[in-house]
Image (cartoon, rainbow, N blue to C red):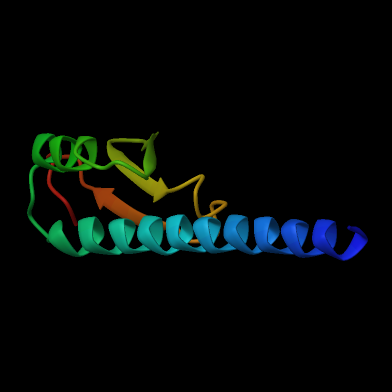
Amino acid sequence: MKYLKRIVGSIFILIVVIIFGIYWNESVKEIRVLHDFISVGTPYDKVISTLETANLLNYTIVASGDEKIIAMSSYYSLKTYKKVIYVDENGFVK
C-alpha cells in the first residue's frame, strides 16, 4: 500500500508537469507567432485587434512620450518569455 501511494503520487506529479510544459510551450509559440505576424508599418489598431485574438498571452501598453511600447508575455510561461513592439508617434509599428 505504501508503494502504491508513492506510485500514484509520482504519476500525478508527472501529469501536472507535462500539462504545465504543454501550456508553457504553447504560450511561447503564441507570443512568437503574433510578434512575427506584426510587421513594421502595421497600424496600432490592427496590432491591438491582433493581440485581442490571443488565448494565452497578455499585453501591457506603456506610453513613452508620443510613442507606445507594447509588451507581450504570458502567465502560463511564468513571464519568462517576452516580446516588445514599438509604436511611433504616428501610430505605426517601428
